[in-house]
Length: 524
Image 1 (cartoon, rainbow, N blue to C red):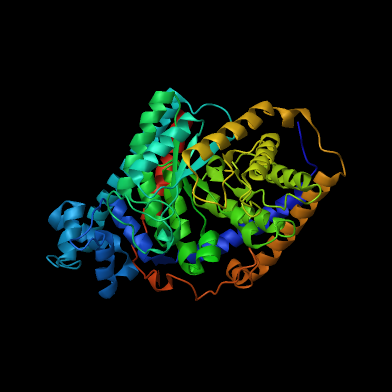
Image 2: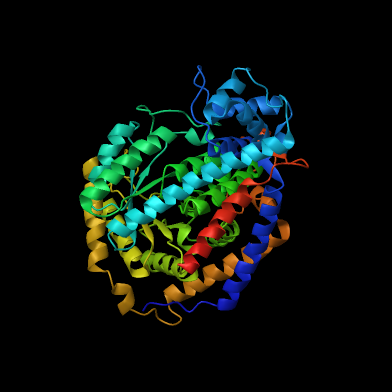
């Protein structure tokens, strides 16, 4: 079986540095909260819907708490106080929004905490229900068995048309279907309500749209006799809310990476790293596979010289995720084939990168992203580039393979573009299914030397970040050649430090539910 000679001591040093970086970030994150986390907590407690002006009720309640300087102690107990009076979470939120009831009216701390705890446990029980349903469907239907999982994108703007295209893609071989969000939704500090049929460059991610797509993919799963996974986004200014909605509506995969939002959407680093910690605990409880966004670094930085930054970020993402309760099988760590295809031996260097990441994170379903930077609009050349990408994926046994489309850089793919891409890349993978088991990498050869160089640089980068801190590294532009400010970007006004007495129980409850499931699994 193909195997690279990598220095295990360097891997251990890299993991140790990444662990210390993660501990520092999470220490900061867990002493703070954000308006998005508080809204996510309300959603977990059962609040849905919007007011007469279309503003989500969770936004209204959190805005009121913020104006009354109550957020420092968390929204949960104040909302629990109102639940004692009204009973139904959505009706309680409406009463607060309409000023029919005040958050602190007749406040009793013990009673409020008791009501909050009961509501949160009901929400966690709903998440457990979706986990059990997914397990049952996978046991009954399976998922097709072959890896890597073929992952495709739909993005029409209309959720009903998305369902049509998702079903066509599944019939053509797709195993994971991702619904791209409408352009710039990541910058909205609220989650739109209801079913939507308009969107630019994608479809709005809403709880109702999640439900519509889930039903559509369940229908085609039974038709095909294999479970088709649904993917969306737990990122942007509403990252924690999206994670909760994904867990409640049985999404299987969610893109979840704070660094992507910092670097490419200019979301404040404090805000999104705090949000990420919470969202990953939710995803762990929901048994959701997260995908990280390191592949994007190579769209702004040169893939040949910046490959080590991808690996360094993978180590950091792994460390943070595991500390939030995620297991190896849930870590779709990102990387991509982004070198210039006209460069001599480019394929060897890309195989080195892919094999190195696959080997270091051997128990994770690494997510391999297709060529985009050097796609030109020449669909025939693009088809060849994507075929080579599929061959690299097959040789190195990637876990999740985002199918490259030959019309990349031209337009949102049509159904027939996606069909041709699935057919071609599925064919390449099938014909080279066990190639990686039949070959060996030359000792001291181009591939091995490249992997060793990238690993060494990643280790050195991580040990430098360990000394200076991740926030400083981001300010200095160490990832993707993009510099961001600790106090700049979008969303900083939604960050606050937890006060003494903050009802810090939600993550503990979610992690406890994970421990209970593991204990039950061990006994069973």
